[in-house]
Image 1 (cartoon, rainbow, N blue to C red):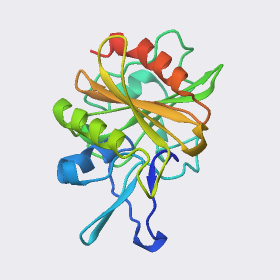
Image 2 (image 1 turned 90 degrees about the vertical axis):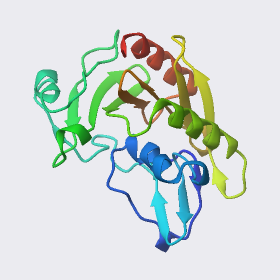
Image 3 (image 1 turned 60 degrees about the vertical axis):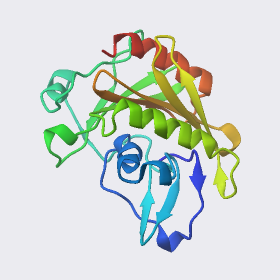
Image 4 (image 1 turned 45 degrees about the horizontal axis):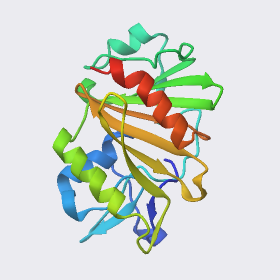
Length: 210
């Protein structure tokens, strides 16, 4: 997925979980909450290795291997939550939907062309409760600077009061931001987004993400 906060593991031990791009890192916390590594990391637990959404992104044009929807209305009919484009941006030029999943497990990515470059807005049903998500934020931030890790995790609070997590790649080349609100998990990311731009975009969306 994206190079952000990585725990190095032997390449042969890494695997992928068939979960959504946002929910994979959060759902892993439900199973392994307090003993797991966080988003943007790979972590080994007993005989299982979980590869969370911190893998290097190889396809920015279609980050979820999704199918293109003809319109917002078409995508809306296929998910159980209300889709919300980011206000004050131009309309998404592409709408992607994960194929071959039950309606409750689908992920939508709205793609925008902006002055900051490509922006991907992920939306999906949450797989953690808010208290569990808050615990995971604290856990990932606590991993900053630990041996075997790269990149950083930063806890922030949006202008509307929602707790959010920013993860930044080694060297600071790109950041993303995620939060849960109103029964939806949101993530905003792009190949050249800064922390500041992540927060700005999230603040545009968060007041209407209810």
